[in-house]
Length: 223
Image (cartoon, rainbow, N blue to C red; front, side, top):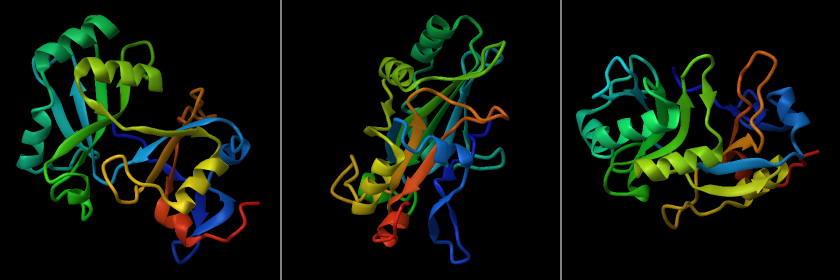
């Protein structure tokens, strides 16, 4: 499954600038004062890793889209993070025999994006979500479950930087904050409500706030 597109919190105008207060989804407006979990948005490339009973000793590593071809050097770096024996054992124990699991993460560093070397001179992989596809229904792991599984898998997980409402997250982006990887401004934030929520069509409620959008909009009212 391709990772769902993450909506920016507000709509954009014809110049691609955010229209502060023009919510891109009604759910964001309704949940503006609720508690959200905010993690650092990493400027890299989306990567997913599939584990299934059809290929018990193999992991399929792909980009965000089916047709996305990852450079060999990126694949080799990511494969170093994956210990199939340990992963298979942990997934079977946590999700049952025949587990179908998708790991979603970000490849970063090196020549991945213009900012890659700010994160690291070497390629890295950081986990940000896990989808358990076991029947009867696929389920996204909570933040607590994600960090627990990541520790067992010995994988880095995107750092949590704030538990607060949407307005607090916007203020954080507006003033800018340093990345957990070094003394440079983070690209932004990705947020989900503290209690997992879905819209009427079953889509997960999740949003992103890019630092550059709100530093540019400093001084505009959020009301």
